Length: 389
Image (tube, rainbow, N blue to C red):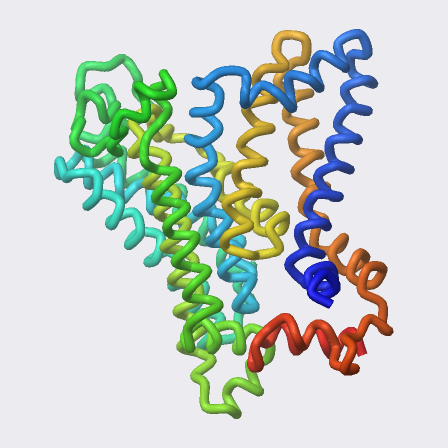
């Protein structure tokens, strides 16, 4: 009976769906490698799946890239859990990064204050789609896409017009990048606490641990608090929530504000690491969009988001190790394909759920297993029980 509860549980099915989706993605990736460059297909695939563990420096880079991915994934996942689709994470990430860098370079603030500023910047940029959705019923996808571009150009315009932000002010030849934090303000760089020495890599800092702590907090908020229950209730059925006395408008706005704040922290973690500089480009950064497959692969679970972000970061580092046998464009295609198929875990979960947990899958006392595994009042278990019957 105990094994049956685990085997039929939503958590086990979600995990299995993610693993199956990843395997399909890797299989198709190997086929594409064979088509592009057959003699090096096997060695390229081996590099893709092993490079992240070949050296401590590569492993440190996996953790370094995973930290902002966890945050953008949490941003999208949090919105998903509350019935919203936050496709504006990249704009919130950019604005959060700008707030952090302005605080670090222009005002010479320490790293923890800059990280709070990043959170505030992302929250400010998340409030607009929430307001339009709550007050005027404008779909959040439309407004968040528009605010991605508004945020990008607003940040570029602001940075150009601040005296100390650009690298050229600090004596560097770069005209289109912000100043390196190691020169402009070393106190704004995230602490390494000896981790860089342990892994022999300058990439390593406490960013990944901050991201994991925030993921745990989000899990507790969504699953163990009344506030989280109200947010999810509005996502499942806004009208029913209002009938029950829950303010749907308030919760929609708060959902987007929290989602934006999470993405903003991601921008802060990336640029406060001290290894990257913000570039005044006219294209949106990919980190915010990569949060979408991270959330889908994790089935919008905050804890699962940590593992899916680590996986995507891992294959990105593996892709870099495939050069020079495979050019950068081919590597991008392979990685994009793996990420794309991995994001089908939600569809795969529904398929596996019908196959693994048939309608006759009941406990000994004729109580549906979905109702046993979760406490009363959990909307996910109720939805699962209804679908099973």
